[in-house]
Image (cartoon, rainbow, N blue to C red):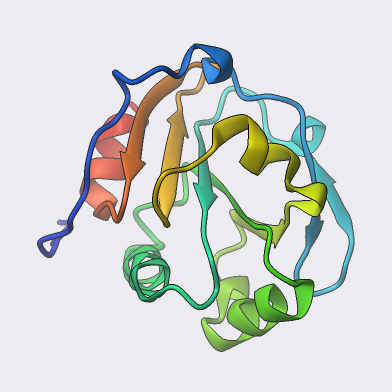
Length: 154
């Protein structure tokens, strides 16, 4: 059973998101080892949660704590967490929050702000949930509980 604290989530799926209805091609420089991860490496027929975050953002830190608290329930989802802040800050965040304990999370640097400029997230964190067919299912501007993420990915 999932317990969800009161999060200030805002569903913005109905907004002007026509340019991101399908997950675009991307590459990120991953923490902690600087390897490159691309959209082509995502597992097919499995939902994807694209999360924009800033390592120094309190709400982002709370979001990661929520994910970690429910990591066993979230194993059927792929998470791609991206930030445009310096790589060293992303790596510190990765290590401090023990993100490695969730093997279904890829975290890294959005070099040259390629994804950020396409999505233009209004808040951090911003979560874009893509269903198993690769179509945009829901967007959360702000924190989202694990139950809401799972429900959106169905």
